[in-house]
Length: 216
Image (cartoon, rainbow, N blue to C red; front, side):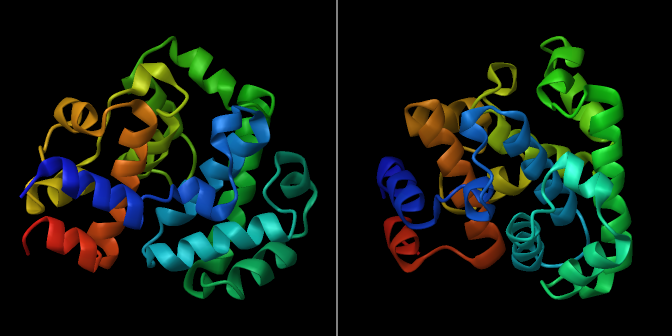
């Protein structure tokens, strides 16, 4: 069993970033993409399946409801309808209110630009996590999800890995510590893709190739 082969199989088979899946290109490091990623994390923090939350997050973009300005101007019933039709039926009312509240907070506190949250944190990863949890619906686990992919761009977050990913890493015979996993991946981009793959493997099960590489 080669740790390198397991990591490569994970990245190749299950390494799509969750942000990319919903259409939030955070690698561009522009306000709109960060806000859409924040909404995705907020939706993923509800007690529904990750697949349903991601479907809803993608639908928000398809409907143009992934922007601070359009959310602030949107009708509540429209927000409810979009969420209800896209896997979020149990939480459509709450979700409709929370995504607008997120827009209000980001507009009021950061002028619509989450990069100013980063600036407000002064390079402190713990403070970034604390400020993220001021968004309604986002707790420690949600902050971890946000930071897991945000470290692709925000240097002060790297290397970071949340418990979900580390537990899956251990199950597959990989290091269960962020620094060691990062070194195994080889570079930061590969590391972030490896974390996405570990999260998917934990939520959906490892792919056959990953299992074979891990000798399972």
